[in-house]
Amino acid sequence: MPGLPAQAARPVVDRSGAPDARRSAPRAGRSARPALSGRPAMTGPSLLALAVIVGALVVSLTRLALRRRAAAPAERGPTWRFVALAALQIAAGALLWLTLFPPQVLTAPGRLVVLTEGAAARLPASGDVVVALPEATRAAGATRVPDLATALRLYPEPGRLRIEGHGLSPRDRIPLDRTATFAPPAPPKGIIALALPAPVAPGARFTVGGEIGALQAGVVELLDPAGAVVDKAEVKAGARFSLSGAARAAGPVLFDLRLRDASGRQVEHVEIPVEARAPVSPRVLVLAGAPSAETKYLRRWAQDAGLALNLEVSLGGGVQLGDAPVALTRATLDAVDLMVIDDRRWEALSRPERAAIDGAVRGGMGLVLRPSGPLSEAVRRDWASLGLPTAETDSLRAVRLNGPNSDVNRYDILPTTSGGVPLVVTKDGQPLAAWRARGQGRVALWTVADSYALVLTGRADRHGELWSELVSAIARPGEAAGVQVEGLARAGQRVALCGAREGLTVVEPDGATRRPLVDPRATPGACAAYWPMSPGWRTVVDGDRRSALYVQPADAAPSLAQAQARAATQALVETAATGPARAARHAPGSPWPWALSLLAVLGMLWWLERRAPRR
Image (cartoon, rainbow, N blue to C red):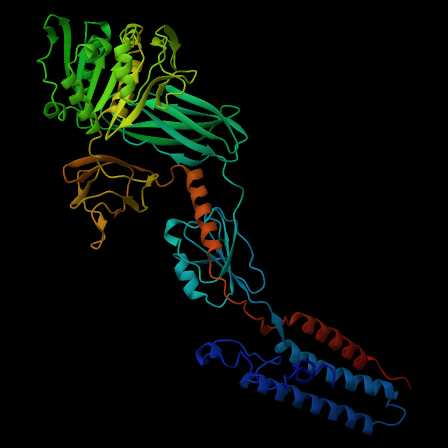
């Protein structure tokens, strides 16, 4: 009979004898799932409803037949009316059953939709389960979960995972157990990549690099602690930038990196922590063949920078000025980290002294060769034997460094094909020095004739930067100081302190001491985990080493955090588990079509019942 669910929704039976894969599922899973048959399971309520509907139909049809039989032939009405009333009553009973227990339909396996920060509120599609992580602010209608692991554990049935928003926070970056897709919003406009400067020596320059997001055009500026712009660059979408500054004194300090759009409005700013560590003072020996302003201001800079500098100026005839002379033997030179010698003093050296210097360089000492005028052929041969050949010309040439009032003169003796590593370049990209490795040490050729002129023109900072860069690159390397932190340290997030020794502690801003967690199975130099709860400067104590750690506020550099979350989430999605696709399942259909049909049939039945038969 049409309309009855047992006939209309009967499934096709597979008679091949192949076992049904769904029947072989574990009983625990089978008991928690809806009926797999095409017709509703006959439970107690459904059996009771079926009995009531069938009983009502039997009573109604019997009453209709008895009333027609008892009526006079003239009052019975046409036969089609009797048939229509009976058919409409049967149809009403069937439609009532279908409204209460609609037939099941095949539905695709639903998705688990995870809303992260920046996700828009949405209505779930058919079969979807929508959950919201704590960072999702617009999550109307979604189920709140504390983390992604909880969501995956509570909802194992959806066969696919969809992540919406900027991406997963570090807490939720776990392996995904099902096929996943990621639907991020528009990329951020601010700074999406940032390379923080490493600790530098006092007075040395540092570099901050990064990448701009979707901002069409703008300017990125680096401001010192006083608020003065020390460097800036024009940028556009996807452009990379590099800005530099200098830390004048030892200690931690905060610079400010600001991004402005084309109209000058600030888009974003990030605090840049810079630590000027006073390194283990290198022992510098300066040998000069005559007094000069160059050595005078070099010594003054060394005193201001805290370097242990020993200056010896030869006046000829065995007369010397400056500090107590140092015997040029291998034993004494092994205690020297850097030697600066000019061509005049080099000519006055004996053969054993030159051999001692060469041996010390091979053992790790740095050597800077500084011309003070035209070079003799003997000096050229000696310096070429050290790996630094010189050009034939000795003329002076004026060059300009970066910044105003930064003109100096240099000897044009660096060959274009010397093979040395360029060091300290001019505004036009010309090197002022070049160095080569020799054994464990380095030998450099310094061509600047009058760096002291920078001090006389008010650029003592630039003078210090030149010599600081030269000393840092050529001097004997010392032991690395302090632990290393990759990226920004944020309040409320785990920070990895790498390169730590035993007994690592962190001194909080309020003076309290905390011990980061170190894996007991890790080797020395491994990373320790630290969870800062508030922003500000910390002091990391690692044995006899101390280093500064700046913790950013939790909401600092939002574009950078969003870009990192997008990249990490995309990587998780690409490596998510890719198991077999889950089969479609049966679910109760919508009762509304059957209910509307029932109302229509009842209306027709009421109209036909009230319509008096023609006499």
